[in-house]
Length: 68
Image (cartoon, rainbow, N blue to C red):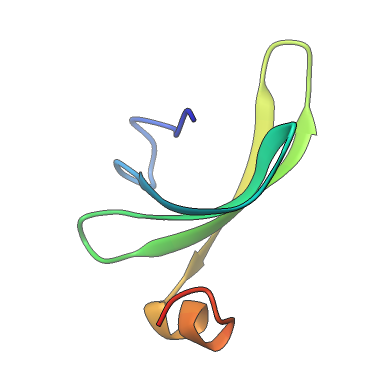
């Protein structure tokens, strides 16, 4: 899976994929500074995919039951 590089988000590391039907559509990723993002696939165009990244805390992920 391709994660964006050289963006304001920093260098992301894929931590968990929650759906994988034809395309990966929902996952969370983190960076070395301890920030986490939920990402959801929004749209596929001719030459790119559009993703929405939402910053979340580890506590948010825990409350959603995505991490312990």
